[in-house]
Length: 427
View 1 (cartoon, helix red, strand yellow):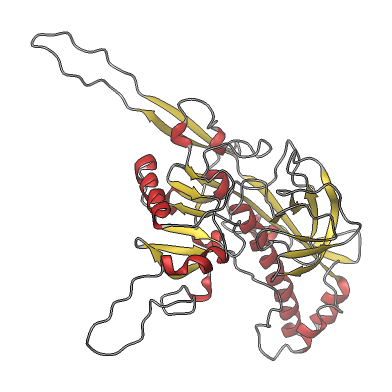
View 2 (tube, helix red, strand yellow; view 1 turned 90 degrees about the horizontal axis):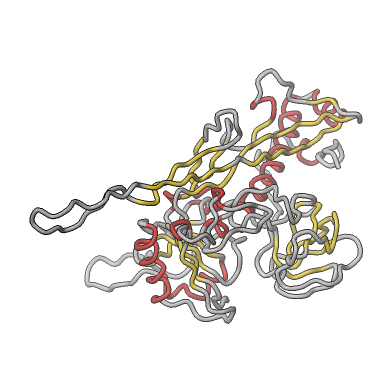
């Protein structure tokens, strides 16, 4: 539905009041997008970024007898990781009536456009963030079990918005739509439930997922790689393609695998030993140094005593203890833009993404993973990406359309610089 004068009436009526409206929407954080660095990637007209990797050192070194034969030299070996940036486009339209009615006041016109653009950018940020934390399929929510109802429970906070059109996809083949192009009618953030339009699906099972309509099949995934796809010891889903086009299942490619600590599907408690093993493995296997832990809220709630800093009492000037329980104490990131909390383990900050998948913790070196993008770092209106293009585009209806464009991909030069601890009990 296009933005109309009727549905933006309130925002234009009070153009001289508080400029920032109160948002009656659930969590708008895009933690992973904010905590990861961005790098423009030259693709040389081929739409592809090539990263050379040294996988075998040069030369031979050996002890010899006096006057003995020299060893045979050993050649170095290298591999290429190749990445193609994914194209994304966004559309929002405004009615001619909205534009004309608000055009008589530059304040009302500015307020109307700003409201629409801010709202649209929040949807973009939410959807991109869901790509970045996933396994390469852009999952907006993963089912915890069979649930053949129009209201479905997901195992973590779903990343969809009210009004979005999504597919419910069978995880067994990524090609069967259990619900095709249904609208999100309501979201209960306390219970992780989403209510959809249309009839109830059938044949659902744990692991089935929702995704933006028509963006995933058994052969295509129009999404970026995700942190849980890059930091893994197995290849991502076939429809997304291998990380950097390197096959992890090929002998000799273990350098492209992260450490995964699983428990055969049985949930267990998170312990210091597990966290220290992850830290050790990142150092030993990947040559990296942990600088971030990432989990959802439920993990942190259950294990906050484990990851809060030690508190010492000493005689002296009384002062507040900053290392207490809760996310609101000083030292936390302002507005939680990058999800950084006051909690740390072994000196490493703990980040919380409310949409991160359940029952797992990701430990990684952020210097070895970044968002590669085209000319524009963030999604921008087409008119800004391609100068000379009009901001408003003519449509076949009495509306003007604004198009947004972005190329991006989650890229890593060392997937071994991360570790995942799976099968954890949650709050």
